[in-house]
Amino acid sequence: MEQSYSYLDIAKMVDHSLLNPALTTQELEQGCALALRYDVASVCILPYYLARCAQILAGSKVHASTTIGFPHGGHSTSIKLAEARQALQDGGQELDVVINISKARSADWRYIHDELAALTSLIHEAGAKIKVIFENAYLEDAAKIRLCAICAETGADWVKTSTGYAPTGATIPDLELMRTYSPPQVQVKAAGGIRDLDALLRVRAIGVTRVGATRTESMLEECRRRLGLEPLTAATATSAAPSGD
Image (cartoon, rainbow, N blue to C red):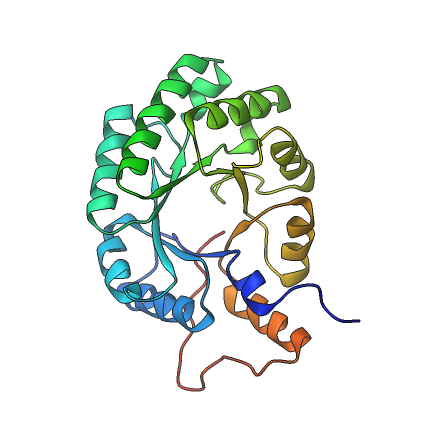
């Protein structure tokens, strides 16, 4: 049966994750090279290496991205704003921001709203995009629904399931809930547990447009194999080490 997607349809869903704090600079360099080779959507890299990542990706269609308030979200708003300013200065085009999980569990929705409004305004003024990480493992469904509403109100570009460092990551019920309760202009990103092409295709069917992935190479090589395309793995290239998802 003919596949209902192209290679780029799938590759441009992938944010190649390089967020494991133990990654060496050599592994970060190799990860950026891998992302370029497979023409993914973005590289989400450790903040300190973002400027170098943006330099490597310059002139390509692969975006440079990083995290804000990662992984626990408990930074003060002023620190998150400072992180975002630095990331934008370093060439960040997409910023993945962790909500204040404690405030969400405390139902302090005004705090959540005001923090996300400030961050979204700063990021959008710079021409960049914001993905808001909920960390669903710690939240009840009612809180997730309220967060979807706040993200719509504040103009977020994506709502995102998780950091990859909580007890659970992306689940089908959570993704269905987030897609149902987010307006069409707010996209959905799955992170944590998307480890092969079939998992990516399952979440794509729900309406997910991005996934955070560390197993990018094997996932996209399988995509190419199914589409009858030549492999992109270079004999002389060393893939980046697994970086935590």
